[in-house]
Image (cartoon, rainbow, N blue to C red; front, side):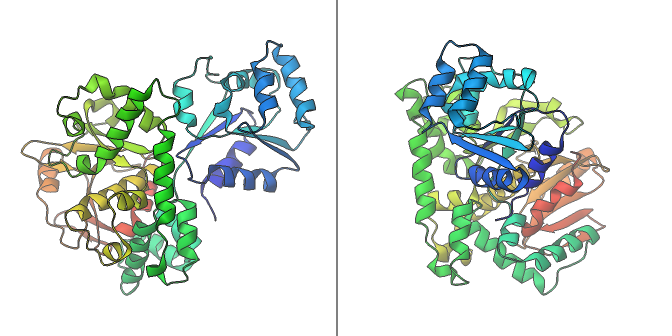
Amino acid sequence: MKRKIYDKLIEWKNNKKFKPLIVLGVRQCGKTYIIDEFCKNEFKNYKKINLFYDIDVVNLYKSSDSSEKKYNDLKILLNFDFDKEDSILFIDEIQECEELISELKFFNEKHNNVRIICAGSLLGVKLARLNKPFPVGKVSRLYMYPMDFEEFLIAFNQQLLLDEIKNCFKNNKAMGILHNTAINYYKKYLLSGGMPESVNILLNCENEYYNYDLSKLNDIIEDYKNDMNNHVINSNETLKIRNIYDSLSSQLQNASKKFQYSIIDSNAKSREYLLPLNWLEESNMIQICKCVKLPEKPLLGFVDNEVFKVYYSDVGLFNRILNNDIKTIMLEDMKIYKGIITENYVANQLKASDIDLLYWRGKRKSKVDFLITTINDGIIPIEVKAEENTQSKSLKVYYDLYHPKYMIRISLKDFGYNPKTQIKSVPLYATFLIRTLVNK
């Protein structure tokens, strides 16, 4: 499957300033597969090790030998000269040896001709809780997410449809008859989400989507819950992590439109849940959307750290957690959860484009689902609707207060622009193209 992160890996390869690369992302989003493909395709000499199994490497770096001796012994141990031109070493599950993570500084400072890529399960959590010094400034980081809708269409060999979506977005032109085709693919995406194995199962259904096997999504959720025992302080923290994760479907449907600790436990105190919440964020199982008090540049300078929303990292997993079956999703019979499922989908698409998740909440229950800083037009509000009926008072309240150059409404409606309301209509299936507007 084509993944857009491959182009970023090429950029890293072509960068003249060599630094070891750490790839972070939620479990089963495809990190190992795409790194392996990249290393095979782009380098003449390639070696992969997995620290779950290569215990001798772990023991080597736990020893008291000098950094240079460890470096030379590693070559002998692996029977691989990573100093050689056009060579690369891929260290998977590097979280199993924090001494080796710390030694990446030595690689960068003393052997900066060497190409090394590192990845691992819960690596973000491990990096946040290291006992050894982290090599600050000596490594590069790259974040990977589940497949976005663009990658989903590419997997389904829908390049012509994808090209037309991009053309209509750019020129504010309606898709017409193709709109329903794209909407049908959007529904299928809600079913599988963006986890590569889940998408592959859907692909193999050969258009018989009611035969789609939901068990893979169940397995991923179970794996996530098992992971909650790892890199924790004690079993009490594990329990709190699970309680937060299990509360998210209720949190998202919460009328206050913000995360509330009282939904987890009526007696819960925020200080008791800060570390467990951070664990979930660093594991990339959740995505946090912060509330902006005043929509001015830079948006991050006006964040209210006490007010935020939390989304699941993948909308397919969210639907499975809600126990929505194939018929419910394909026939859009998700009832009161349809709106928040749609909002979660949009959050996932924005995050996959490395867009900061931010929203605005005003007085009298007015709110704007997301805010972006565009290249040419300043701060633009985004409202998300699950239906074609797009009536809303919140965008008008926002416009009267802050007068943006235009506003975006993401919904089931086709592309269009209303000069009277100054609202640009973007279909849900084109959310990934919001990245073309953003100043990045």
